[in-house]
Structure formats: structure tokens, C-alpha cells
Length: 319
Image (cartoon, rainbow, N blue to C red):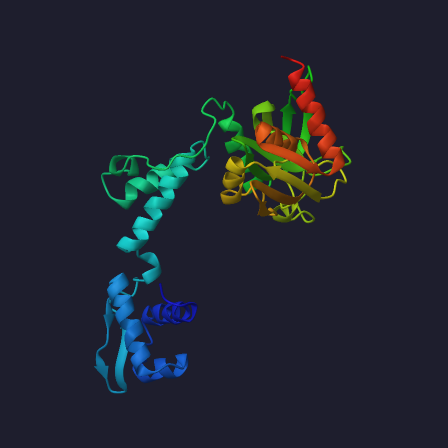
């Protein structure tokens, strides 16, 4: 892969070589680009070797001139073997997810890469992503994906787990996020005091386009929004706090090699792995801690200690 400076040079050469009426000499080119004749020859060889560029260099009265034999040629219209392989692998990765609105287009591209064959003919799947195979609302994913892409307002009929009747929301959709094999829609919901609202796709009953001007997201940096979160729930006006956890030796080794959050800082004290996180306290954090059962002890903050202790006692009372 050439450097960024080389890529700029090669793009300029590609433009010049397509010019039917005005052919530049070697001297004019190296003067314009501010490079040596040696570097110019290297760039020419690179274009020929990697893109089979049909570069002609006949001698004229003013010197040797350079141009494409086929003026319709451009290296940016060509795909070499390396580029095709990268695209094939990228398409296979996309196909592993499934349910995308571009699935048909992806299939057509895969057929065109090697005439007569699609990627499914060429290779079996060897990368598997965690997915809920019984997930019944992939169609909602595709519909929301399209609404975000084309900035469409949508009317969502949504049924929360703990409520008997569904509710209708008018949503300006911003992003889709996956957590623990479940997909969530984040967007501006009309008529509520807190935003963004998040809706689990598997609780959506129906989605329809709503004829109203779309309000784009101009205030929320979602990358920053999720930095201090485990999961997707961000309680209103909640701020991050220090969470201290102590793991036993066997689980501590696992946590050390696979941090549970990007803020994780840890150190060993004999057989205990002490972990410090800076995160917002939410339901997903509690659920994660409880999943480690006897392997972890919550040291602080006090409100989290009491919450986990209460939930463990409630669980014990069922046996």
C-alpha cells in the first residue's frame, strides 16, 4: 500500500493520463509534482504492476509524453486480485450477519466478482458471530436501518415486557446498537422529556413511516454516550462512579485477559484480582456482576453492595 503522499501523486497522474487533448512530458510532470525522475518512474511501474495501467510514452518534439492508450481507463475503475480478495472477505463478513436490507445487493456483487460463482459457491462460512437464531424481528432491523439512512420519521408500536398494552411512539431514529445478542433502536421520541429513547427491537409490534420532518441528531455523540455504560440503559441524570470488584483467582485471570469495560484497571493482591471500573450504575451492570456468582465480591459503592446483596438474598429465598 503506497503512502498517502504517493496515493495523491498517483491519483493526479491517473487524471493527467486520461486527458485526450493534452499530454504532459516527463519534465512537466516531475516539475508539477516536485519529485525526482526516479520517483516518477517508480510511480509508473507501480501503476503498471498493480493495475495493468496501459501507459504509453512515445517521443514527441518536446520530449517523451505520457498518457493512457485507452483514455477511458482509470486505475480507480480497476480491481486487482488483492482488492478483489479484500472485498470478498468483507462481503462474507456482512453475509454472516444476515437480515441486512442490502442482502440482495451483496449477493449480486458476490456473483460479479467471479462470473458464474457466488461467494457461497467459493467458500463455506468459517466465522460465526453470536446471534439469537430465534430472533423474530430482523425485518424491523432492515426497516429501521433504511429509516436512519434516509432520515425518515417512523411510528413505532411497542410493547414493554412489564406492560399489558402496547404503546405508540413517534421516533426520529438515530442509531442501532447490539448488546448481548439483542438489538436496540436509539432516537428522539416526541412527547418525552428525556432523550434519546431506546427500544428493544424484539418488543416492537409494528413500524410505519410517519409523514413529518425529520429532526437530525446534533447534540449527542453516541460514541461518547456509551463510553461509561455497560449495556444500553442510562438512567436519567446518572453520572459515572467508581466501582470496586474483587474476583477470585480463576475468574480473575479471565477478567484480566478479557476486561469487562474499557475503563477497567486491575491489580493482583495474592489470589484476589482487584478491579476498578468507572461506569454508570444500571441494570446491566448488576446482571453482569450476578453472572459471576460466588467468584466476585462488590466492595463499593455502598448502594451497589446493598443492591447486589438484596438480589442474592432474594434468589436464595427461592430455594
